[in-house]
Image (cartoon, rainbow, N blue to C red):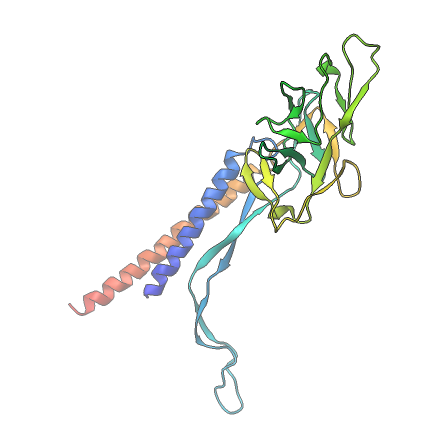
Length: 265
């Protein structure tokens, strides 16, 4: 009887974490490049009172066993990297990835991070940086006097610009490359739309947009979050109801203990 109390408590804790995860997804429904997380669960170890296949006579074995579960645990969270909706911005420095791949940026300490958020800016040195000022890798430098409105970025990541006061001949400034991973779900979420490579994700594979295994770059767009509000609301309702049912199981166990206590009064 007491086992039911602890078992239901694990269910309530698991649903709390599910609601936390759902709340985070919903909070980032308008975050550029955000990838929603799904929570994975597994049942806990079983108390085996009789093993399936136990001999019940010289010629017969039990077709079933007697095992009592001890609840649930959260195994982990899985990032879903399905394509988010594109939003047209008309900003020449905004880019979105259509397909697989990440932009690579360098932190001040030299470490690399990866992102799907392609709303780039120009810093004081003319380099393309993300919203936090981290430099795009490979570095793209915009020369002084460049007409930013006339910067174009091709589907392969080639960056061309026109110098102000020139004969309108485009100047090649470099090429934006993409990074892919064998297991993107193994990336570590670092906040600020950034991911870090881990032993689970494998090392980054760098290549040009449009090559085999790499997506295309779309200029003048940013990729929105891939959170589906309806799906998250269904998950929220399901978690609420599961939490409520587990609390009722605890109440039922408490009432049974109260009844057993009353017998000896």
